[in-house]
Length: 168
Image 1 (cartoon, rainbow, N blue to C red):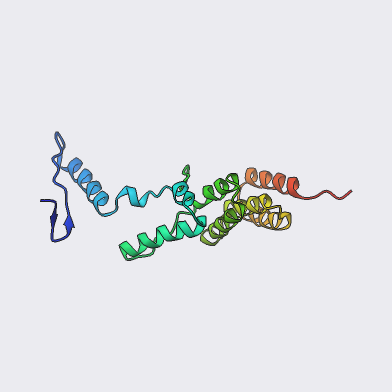
Image 2: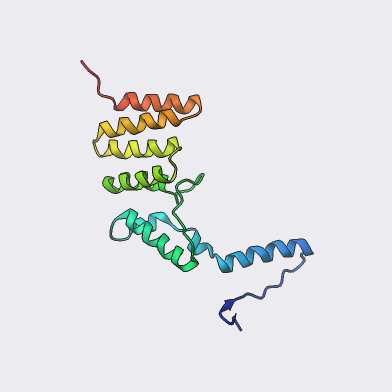
């Protein structure tokens, strides 16, 4: 038997485990049944590689997930050391020569994280890749104002200087 009135379950024996160890493992198993990693750990590069617009493909995936669970689920804007986030996908799309789509993704990133200097830097780099220096400088300056530590500020100042035309 694999279901009780539409409720999936798993019968598992945890060998050589104590009461607390078993409880933690069982709770993790329940979460995997209800929220399977295969759905919740979406592979963004695979989603944007499908035919069509990258952001629309991401929206479609997360809209379907939201509909399935009955609450709003949004793409991750940031996640440390992960390629499955809007910040990485914007850069990835630039490398794929899909610059207009990179701008859309970076704009969404700034919408989700309006106080993130990294979001505005991402948008600046997308505009730079699109040869729109004015918007690149504008967004890089927003990033500079939001940056908190001196290292990031110095790096952003160098970036702004590198994309600002010199007057002769």
